[in-house]
Length: 158
Image (cartoon, rainbow, N blue to C red):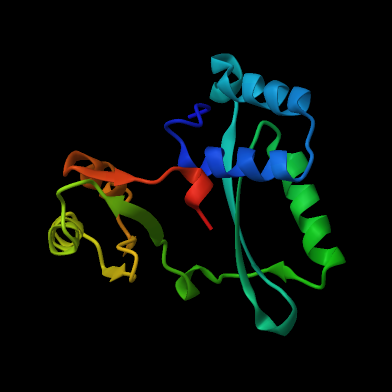
């Protein structure tokens, strides 16, 4: 989704772009291109696996309207940095982290129970009552929101 209020990854990326001085006009043009339905239909999601220096594994995900150009660009970047394509997906697991502050009247135990109930694999609660949930399930943030717990926005992401 090209809506930062529903796409946390986009919201974080936009925040970082602004912090790094990307002109507002460039950001708006990119968002307009991303939200153009006819253009979205022509985008292909590509996933590359690579081994870099020191046998470091990389998974590269991108969306492209020109697969050949993207293949050439990725291979060139890998070669320039001493890397090559290779199977490395077995070295990774797709996890996510959500950080939130329980709403008024929700104690830490209730927040912990709610997180475990919706599939969290790990729950950490710091001294200030901030809760961090690790999970493989993309539905955890929405389930937590439904359970009277307020998820912090991208400005609190690390």
